[in-house]
Image (cartoon, one colour):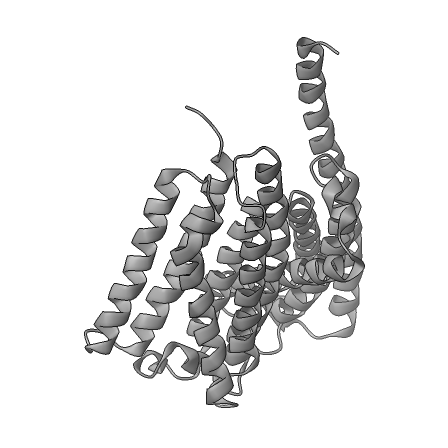
Length: 357
């Protein structure tokens, strides 16, 4: 095949891939929309008119249904695209690894769908104060909500890459944390510490702790994608240390387990275990920053400069906290921001490693 033929093949293959995914996403949306319309009919006929938002409202029912639809669409979509261009490597994963990855991706999209639906109906309730949802609107709103949930989820899981995974991770943790802040029963939580958000027997603490636990699970899935990308760079001799991908992947997996532990064991359950998990996260993060120049030989020089800047920022923040310049809450927020900021920088540099301008 000539170079021109190869270029033509690549141009044709990529739209075909996109067309297939878009078509499947539309079919998923139509199926979910029909299901939503039927559910809307049942709600409108059997229940009295419900408010848009509240403890037991139409919005809360939609949120639960949207989460369920997102879970189904996410699971099916993530499984179906394994044979598509760029995703074939996932066939080599063990059943356990693929299962963990699928659970992580599905749970993240489930939670995001629930939070998005709640946010949408909260906004609607503020715009239509006192409105009760009648039969026609239960059908329309439920069908549209479930259709959008299936469509957006299917597209998201079908185009999962390392960069998309890192963006999803940061978006999920940020949205979940902000949601917990808005719902917390203690408006002065920040006067104690960041982990105080997870100490209440309330929905806000469930959201906060669940976000950290699921986020940790997603980090372990992220490590699998990261390993595949780094092995590709190793084969091209851009990265030169043979065991570099395995070391970085294992450190990310440990970081993910520690993050999940922070959410699964709040400070009011076990301060010792909670702090050990938080400390383990810090050790893995600092370890990756400090040893990157040896483990990741071949990465661009600018990446290592950025890593040293992140490391310096962590050390300076720790010093400022020790001397009392700012409190524990601010310190925890700064460290979390630095961790996820570095992940974003790392992934972007990994994607351009080996390029020559």
